[in-house]
Amino acid sequence: MQIIDGKAVADEIKKEIALEMEAILASGKKIPHLVAILVGNNGSSETYVANKVKSCEELGFKSSLLRFPPTITESELLAEVIKVNENDDMDGLIVQLPLPNHINPDKVMETISPRKDVDGFHPINIGRMAKGLPAYISATPQGVLDLLDRYGIETSGKHCVVVGRSQIVGLPMSILMQRNTKIGNCTVTLTHSRTQNLAEMCATADILIAALGIPEFITAEFIKEGAVVIDVGLTRVEDTTKKSGFALKGDVKFDEVAPKCSYITPVPKGVGPMTIVSLMKNTLLSAKRAIY
Image (tube, rainbow, N blue to C red; front, side):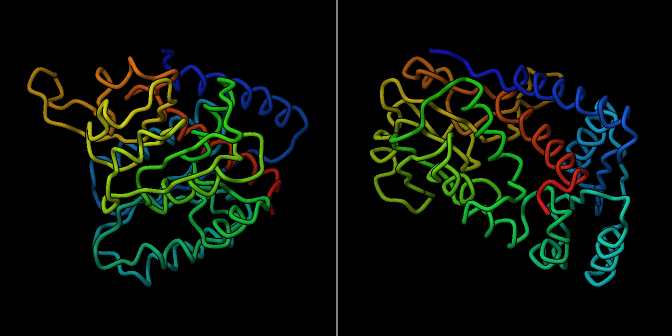
């Protein structure tokens, strides 16, 4: 069993981006500029956005954080998105989810210019990805692809089971794993909370990608001997033994599952660090006008 070290891979990619940034600065080309919109005071959202801003600083990107109160109306927020769309200095735009209940997140995502949609949530980017055209790929699925690639894990002809059908992870992951690409060419089964005989189906997987959002749901009975297990889950669970009062748990019961695996990602320091570095890669692509 080998642990897939997402933090180490993310650090490698950051070094590669930093080298490219040196060349950009030396040639006087445009510095990538990421804009984040944060609505309200959600603690987790604050942490996620702070990590993205920190990564921008580390890599020499420009970043702007636009904060709005939870009382902002949907039309007011859409107007702010349009302002960013029209600002040529701003390359990438993310609107941190979740949003207040009175704001339709789909309407917000559809208002973001596809060219600045570095989260890869716009229907145009999802459609282009599905067709195998150049597109911004959602950061977490792209991070999973990079982990599989950097560890030299063979995917062609393998059976990949994705657990979870969210538009952010599960659905795009299932599309990406079956495409005719280097990391792809799998036979993919997309499962979810309503799937019957879920454990039996997962136990047929050569590659299992868990993105259900239920801590430690995947136990040893779900795993075929020698399978590759990618744990996308990240949930805060109360833990009085920790100074913070909580522990981070993945969807996979690691200690029980790991002995059966050929490769497995831990939580934390698995997929998580790859998500942010993938967002940085997309922002760099946007600044270079490499997709659109």
